[in-house]
Image 1 (cartoon, rainbow, N blue to C red):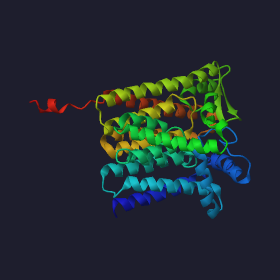
Image 2 (cartoon, rainbow, N blue to C red; image 1 turned 90 degrees about the horizontal axis):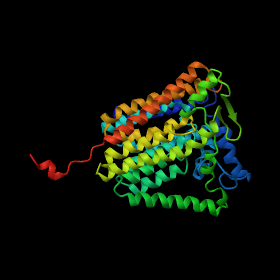
Image 3 (cartoon, rainbow, N blue to C red; image 1 turned 180 degrees about the vertical axis):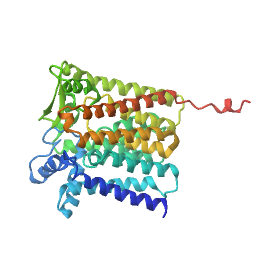
Image 4 (cartoon, rainbow, N blue to C red; image 1 turned 30 degrees about the vertical axis):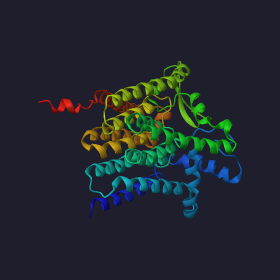
Length: 404
């Protein structure tokens, strides 16, 4: 059997296994699909309002499109949740076909194996969340940046309007790609088109609701910054606790000065992103090539969005997959280490949710320790990429290379 046949057989097994596990594991890892996505999308058909148009929404506007599209396979199989899994699998298959190619490149084989392993390590939450739609689009965008920068930028911009994290890859592309004007123009036109549709539909007042809605959120329980309060709740520190926010449907931490910490985190995230982009810009100015700069800068920025963030959810781990896939395609030896760390982080995340999640919302030692270890792994990954970014060497001028 050829490598390509084996990879496609593994693709089918992985998606069937992970999709089925969503129905078997505790704590409803696919719960968002039928509890949230399905009601939002059905409201469009029934005249009950359109999220992001008639009201503020937690997601960018294009996120509604896959929620609507999932009704097509869902109507065939008679279940919206299964229809969602089919939709995500089809999108993954398109990206996987481009990634695998002819199945002869060792880098592409390694990247394909990594992606399948990552899907298994993270588990059903990676499939049954809106993030599962943005990942294959981001992989396609990364793979096509050099040869098809216009199409790649459109895909990355569209992915950003589904879940905001691919904006990190757009920023990295603007810094690292020589044809940056093409990247900027394509992303701007895509964004303008989406916003134009929103305004034409009567949603001007809610056009940026997904941005303003984030600033008022508290400290989510899985975010690295929440570790102090989570351990405080575990050991009974006065005022430290975990509670469920009914407004945004998530668990958050309470404790001394959490309001101040929450208010500081958003500007801190902006400063951190700006600092990393500045370092990347300096490296680009010194002539560091795309194949060295973009993967490192892209992973550094993506990890910043997770580590320096007051919001934290298990599906955030899927954000790391796309750029590691590209890194392995380009230079598998240099990217095996980060790939292994990302797999470990994803595996720890599946232990946390859905398996040990009861011990997070009602803090117990083992679950809190596993969550802390996962967050430490992310901090290590960020530090690793920052060091690699700073150390990226500028190319030696041709004149210097010719001197004996």
